[in-house]
Length: 149
Image (cartoon, rainbow, N blue to C red; front, side, top):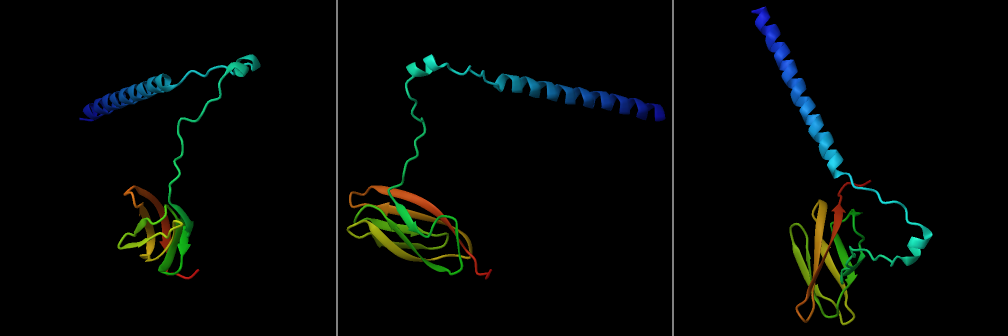
């Protein structure tokens, strides 16, 4: 019986080492395939003939500009006001995790809407619908803490 345990242990170790070796070999092979060739640094003559490169990813600025409160602010009162700018005479809809608030921006696009936060982290979604029914959206995160620091 001891002989069978010994043989089973040896075979298990060999099988385990074989599987582990195959795993590392495949992993190393995939790492070699995922590497990219590094191009040499261009000389001054080559750089003078190159055209300037514009970034392929452009950051789109939202037409809704939140003035206050700033994103990721911790507040110690449940009631606050969202102040910002958008297109003139737009319907502003502010959605908190549990409630929705709405109002209109003035003829200059300025808005100031009082909201009530839930305790903890609040993802606030601000939507603006202009008179031509074009909708813009932005999000900010506000944290309401009832604990005094």
